[in-house]
Each structure stands twice: as structure tokens, then as C-alpha cells.
Length: 470
Image (cartoon, rainbow, N blue to C red; front, side):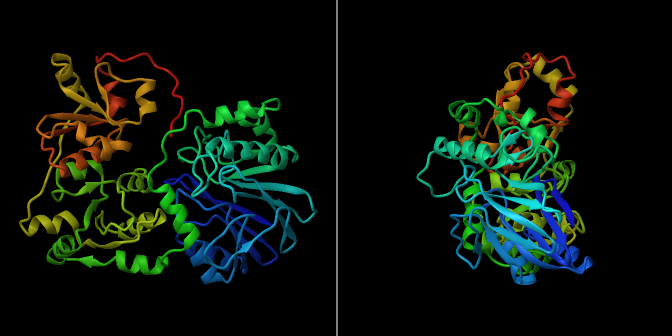
């Protein structure tokens, strides 16, 4: 028996590969499915099952493409109603895989169709539990992400309490917990950096599994501190339930190389968004006017999903050489399938063609501190999450979270000068690009962000442990 966790850091998502006697199962695959096919081929195995723990909201699963490519059966938990061929398992149903078995446990709460899969070894003993978004390391799934339900988040939290107490906590302490996400995912409130643990440890240290916790206490604690989920979550859940375009077609179209004339024609005729995925410093130095910066080396997919509100938005790319397919793939992971190509040789060929470029002015933290100490009327905006701002910030600085820039931009005056900082410099460049594309000409990025500003003489508020770090 082989069990392998396949962890994708930018989404804080864990897929799983199980193999026994030439039969394999994949749990919660990502959109690009070739890595799973390659693993099975290397083991001389055929993929028998594609197990989905629920209709995911934070990414588009690869279940449909993987089933088509492998012949494997897609499996959901009870009450799921997918719009495609799949096996909707019964609670307690046993799936055979080589010499091992997988028991389906219906664990509603995060969503009503949520299922947990209990793997039993060749000796018949419970070995590990694939919990999806029902149980994380140090946390449990949010009860407010279910699509099209009449249930309140308190109702769902009650179901989650029952699922944990009746289906998961009675299992042996040595059972390994393999969750669907780790720290950084917005599917929970405060997950651990660990990506697996024993159930016994979770019973000791996970706040939601306290032995004498009442149902009312659980509901209150699980629903407290939730912030609004990213706007793409319900859209991804619908794609996972209803179906989507095959990844091969998305990639073929998205990696089309374009010269400057073709690039401009596509931008103008399709009203395509120019998405620049390079490094922040490169974007600051030179970029195509009105383009948006979201760098591949940051939390690319989740910021795309948060800030680009239309999944059907035509997109053309500016990338570092050789990273075009990576960018298209990572866009597709969160449902942005309408990438139309990339500018071959990027800014180099753009500038050689004599085209206009934009820049973003930057200051060091020391330069910003000197300016702000001499004039505290300067408009210095902290674009970190509200929870980060609340934990500690520079006195006199306004909170302006990047998460909600699309709805809060109208609070700013496009003729004023704005200085932006985040924690390290990535998010502030994203914010600067958005403001500049909306007519804000006087925008300055503070290099190094709060991490460097906090080392200067600027006064800070007293540090408080943040309630949530979504």
C-alpha cells in the first residue's frame, strides 16, 4: 500500500494518491491531471477511483478530466447532485482498492455533501482519514461556504459538530489525519502549518475537538471571526458541480505566443485584461500601461480569484520567459479559463517597438519613515488584511485592505498622492497597479513593507494576537 500527499503551496491544497496491488485512487485532484496519470503509470497501476470530499469552492478540481483520461469512477458522498456521471456513495459504503478498503463517511457541515474517507490497511485496521474540509490540523472547515442552501451557517455548524462527534472522534487515536488544506487557505480560520497529524493529537490540541465542548459553544466558536470569503468561491463550486472546459483546450489557447501587433489587436478587440505576473521590482521599473500586476511568486491564484471578478474575463499575459504555461495552469486552477495568449519576449519587445511604458515610484522604508515623521498628513495606506492591521500597525496609517480594493476605491481621490505598504512588498505592488489602472497617477510603493517600516522610528500600536489570519 502506498499513500502520498501531493501538496500545492500556492493554494495550500492537498491531493492524495493511494495505490494497492495495481489499483489507485486519487483524492481531490487539482485541475492539471497529468501528474496523477504519470504516478499511476510509474507504479503500473490503473486509476479506479477519483474521490471528491465535496464540491470545492477554492479551486477547480480535475475530477472530470482525470475520469476521462483514466477511466476511473468519480465518487461523491451522500446527497451530492453532480451534473455528470458519478457514483454517489452511501454513508458507510466500502470501496475496494487492491488489498485495502476505503470507507465512506458522510460528514456534513462544511457542505452538506461533505464526505471523509477512512482507509483501512491490508490487515483491516483503520490507518488514515482523508478529511477534506471537514477537519483540518488545528481547525475545522468553515460552515458558510455551501452553495445554494437554505441552511444558515449556524445550522451547518451544528451538522459539523455532529459529524465530528459521531463519525470522526470515536476513531482510534493513532489514525492519521490527512486534511484537504493547510495554513493559508481561506477554507478555515487558523490552520496549522502541519499538513498531517494523528487524530489523538488533534483531540488534545484542536479547539473544535474539546471533549466537553457543548454544541452551543462549538457553533459560537466556529462561526466567530469569519471574514467574507473571496468572490470566486461560489463560482468555483458551481464549476465543480456542473462541469467545465477540458484543461488541454485551456492550455493550448493560453500559451499562444503573440507579437506586439497581435497582442494589441487582442487587447482592443476582446477587451482583454493585461495581467503581468513578473516580480514586483520588474513591474515597478517598466510595465504596459493599465496592466494589472499579480506576481506568480506570491499567492497568485487566490489573489486573481479575489481581485478579478469575472471568471470569463479575457486575459493576456506578461510573464518571465518560460513561465507562460505555469501562469495559464494556475489561472485555470481557480476557474479563469479565458487566457488568450502571452506577449512573446514581454517588455523587451514592447519597448523595442517604441510603445509607452508605465512605472511605479518606490521608496525605501527609511525614506518613507522620514517623510511621514515630518508630515503625518501624508496618505499612507496599509493594504494588509484587516486582521494584520488590527494586530499591529503604524500609528496614523489608514487600513485599506487589498481584499476589498474593488469596492473601496471610490473612497479615495484619484488626484491625491498615496503611499502604499503591505507586509513585504507584494500586495502593495498589486494595489498600486490597480489604482494606476483606474486613473490614480500619484501612487508610491514602500519597498519591504511593514516588515521594514517596523524597524524605523515610526510609532507602532501595541501588538495584539490577531483573531483570524484568513
